[in-house]
Image (cartoon, rainbow, N blue to C red; front, side, top):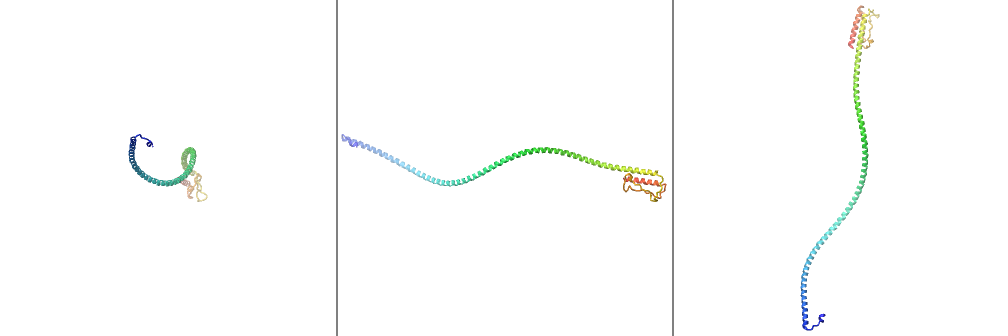
Length: 265
């Protein structure tokens, strides 16, 4: 509007103005065309790049969709496994809680049992100490009893030896007593025989007995301490013995009897 209102003084001036304006527009048009061409070239390049990027993104999107599907499946599977594991873990937790309660109760019982064992151990130790003391006392008394037993055994051995000695002495005394008795009897017998022989030599001629032919009354040896069938032997006198030869024959018979008796003893 300013150009239409502008007034030129001369037509040349107006032509010059419009020519300069046309050249200006023409130059601007060329610049604009160049810019357009550059823009078109850059836009094609950008379009190619964008198409390449789009293809890449589509491929990537497909891969991502595949990964998404795979992950979705895996997620579902993991969810199922997780639910199964949660159920099993819940059961295991319940079982472990029950076992823990049982173990706790067993632990309490064990602690109680340990305390009882410790108490019993203390009692046993006290009993052991008392037993050791009593055992030492018993050992001392046993040693004393052993010593006393050994002393008594030695005394018993001495007593047995003395008993054997006493028995041997008794046997010897009995043998000596028997031997003395035998010797005394022999001496008594020999004495009686000698006295009888002497009395026979000293006696006068004895008259014949009134009984007739029964002979002389036998003398027994019981007065000198002898008894028995062989000591009751009589010395008969023959009725037809002469008066002067009677005492001598009787003396010889008595001597023979004494010798026989001494030989028997």
